[in-house]
Image: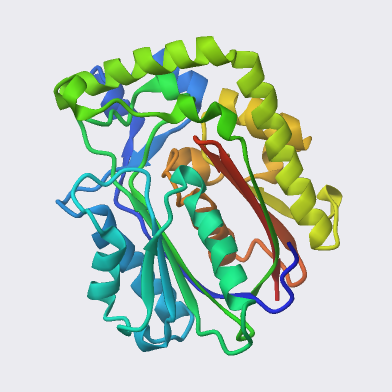
Length: 335
């Protein structure tokens, strides 16, 4: 879908200290062979008791400041995360602690790792619904706590890092124009993303229970069916987004994709799009953070902007997908 008058006025992040993977190897939580296979050098790990919504508040405060916007201006808040066992209404927590206007609704985006881009697409649709629509604040955050979530479980093909991101979108002209978004689903494979209920065992038992469930689901669905469907969907949303933005893959300066391990990235992202690792931010940025759930793309965009690596007129693709499965791509243009 093409967007003619939607801008990212400001983005922000909250990234805890990065812990080198060598510490996990020495502690017996990660094998050296898996480190080499994944390619990550470290992951950010929160050193406090902060929860995902509290992390999102910090990222949102920076995004609001960078956008030169006040909390009172926000008309809609969207919040997404992969996993937050401590809040029944996490979006309400973010709303409350930012001091947003009571008339601004707060919604949770339940799209897993696709949440940031799905949130941006939803924000664009909302802003296009009427010319006087107030700004939308998109927030994401995740903290992967043991034992219920093993951030070093190499079976996922990547390592999990704690982080939060945020973006203010509006119809007011800003430094980044949102040219287009495209989404699709592949719900026939939703079984792959099911999580075991707590009743199946203690928190320490859940990773093993989940692994057995996923193995049987993949076997029943057929791994090749899941793989080919995923590749096709990734390619489709990116091609639709670039087409709606009036460009092609050859006209894209950088591709900001999930920070998955090298094998996952190759077959699920690079091969379907026909792009090289050098066109992403993996080598210079992503491999030092691991997969941060929903925040990968906005963190990468912030990284490029902070280092002056993008020029006026550059078009950038942000792409993501999540179990369920859902897929979203966005094309932004630097002013």
